[in-house]
Image 1 (tube, helix red, strand yellow):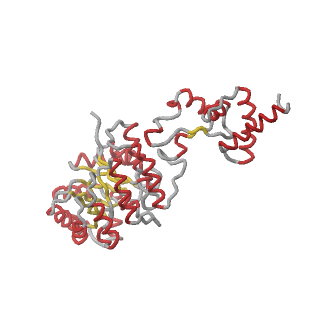
Image 2 (cartoon, one colour):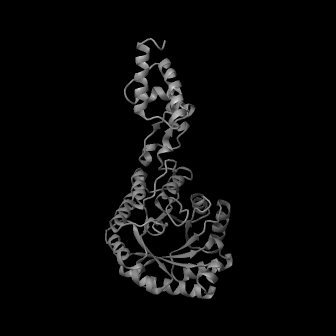
Image 3 (cartoon, one colour):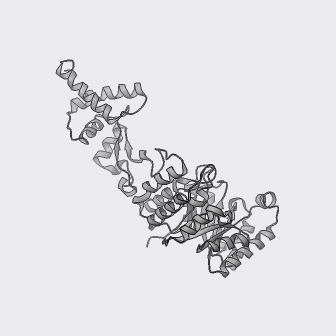
Length: 381
């Protein structure tokens, strides 16, 4: 039986903490609805203690009758939890730093006080029947013995899970696997992987943590998040489905629509080379690749583009082959000969080098029309 992983999307909290990103209230509600339609299990939608429009947006999302659990983010402070309760959420994340560098320099506190504050906030939240995630901020730089004590105490306080935060993205897949496996062996508590991409390994580390026994994964659409971002929802989802054969209850056909909406709302371009949802995912220019993909798409595509709302594209440029030229004309209902394709290929390559880019379809059509005129005039045999 395939394993199930719980998706926790934090686009509306950690994603919005991306420097310069602000979602309007209506955008927050729309993104929440789109994530719910996709089938995400839990949405972390903001920070109620900020008040104002932030609190209004959270209240609207909580009252929208979505299928997903709605979580609000809190410091390990009872007042924060009280503000979350006012918003009508069914779950809270209670976050506090656990590494000595954070405890000493940021909190100006002690390990004992961290444990005390976390326990008090978790106890309070549980007394209202809320689902509780206790977040170990900077867990990846936390003394392992203290992290175990923190997790054990959180469980006793009624916490439903521990969020393991690789806050500054210093883990690698091997160290992630070793640490999560060791933590699972010490304490029987659900673990959420929350990874950052400072060294480009957020998705890999999230997957590695899941392989080691994590039950939940924190993600954002397009990998939005502080600094270099978080693990991307679309990348983690498709990797679990296709590479690890997990049960992924997400309607992946909505990925592209969601990614483009969040890109627009966050004013952050969606690169064409972006894994899973970038338009280059199924764009082929190299003649050898196009030939293979036309004969059997699985030669150069590991999944069906329709699965995520994309389409296969044949791109005409410097690296194209004659099969690409013929296929491109077939798309417009025109069949050209092998010789015509070969003659056009020389012109295509020359133009692509001169323009330093691939050709637009219209440019290729004009090129063909000019070629036919040259043949009629006898300039081409």
